[in-house]
Length: 242
Image (tube, rainbow, N blue to C red):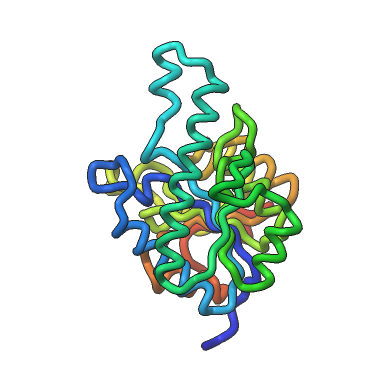
């Protein structure tokens, strides 16, 4: 198999990636599908860390709309990401991939605490590391956690996994004339308010020149081509080539 362009990547998944057709809960078959894609990445010799959201289990906005304390709602979301991480870990290990879950909130009975050097060591040994519980702080999204962790572990690219093939100027499901971007700058994303990641995450990537690749995780050909360095999906970097 040809050598991949990237040695280490961080994969950002939404919680909805694990959801049942209703959009909620954990669908074991969906977890198995994601595990298969991650396995194929590791077989290319790429070290993989994962940050996963919790939208399939808990939407903090619902609580906030009823007057819930923001910190409480955010901590509930962090706990939900741990449930998703455990489901994905189980699917990966049933597929023969050694996996470690590390959490920003300590719960030693079920997962390791997040320790940067330990996470890097796991990656060096070929293990998949799932980084759960966001940053461990309220008011920060899992997008921001993904940006932060990608820099801490020395990832070469942050892959934002979606079910569409890149970033568009409007929702392609609603607008058949939506235009897909091949490349964008961080400033383009912020100025156009494109739905790539939240502004805090984009700013953090921009400040540290962490490239963001947005692609369809469920298109095997796309993710393999992207990891080989081919032009796939949408790439967000500091400057856009002419």
